[in-house]
Length: 234
Image 1 (cartoon, rainbow, N blue to C red):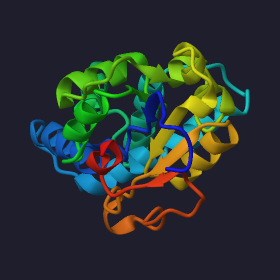
Image 2 (cartoon, rainbow, N blue to C red):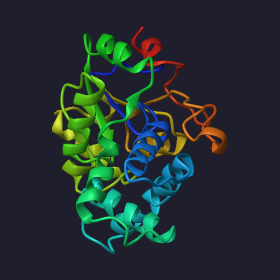
Image 3 (cartoon, helix red, strand yellow):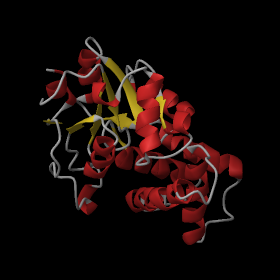
């Protein structure tokens, strides 16, 4: 740690706190199996996640007003189904049922214990592109002990826009330098650092399975580099 101890730690969630890939694939497999169909669940999850950045880019560029990530996930799911020739196979109600997979993502093994320890000395909250509803349900499912829910919805925009990081700090009545952004993605930390926050990198080398091509190690001058959230808490 090269600066003051943070008064708050805010966290990227998808990939940093939760294993979205295998969790979504599990729900996909169950959803199709219950309907007597089969799909390659992990590639389906990858394709669904692959729509994530392009969907948000339209909002970040100003070409579309803010909509919660739940809606983007639903739209992205419909696109993946269409690409697979399954666009007319399921009702919107069924698609929303599958969309809820993003609310039931398993935390990485170190997260609940590490966050619980960190919570004793500082404020902890998500700084995710997920909506308040999504982050709340995800916390209930995984036992994530957040003090509050922050992130994209309070900023009405998506990371890595500076307004998202600043909105989190402002909501806590803290200066950016009093807040540490924790993420498994170097590009997230680049944006947070430019916004004036402290930064911590934690690698999640299996987030994308065999397709992982980056973020195996820290590539920036971050304030902390740790292997687990327990280590960050210590």
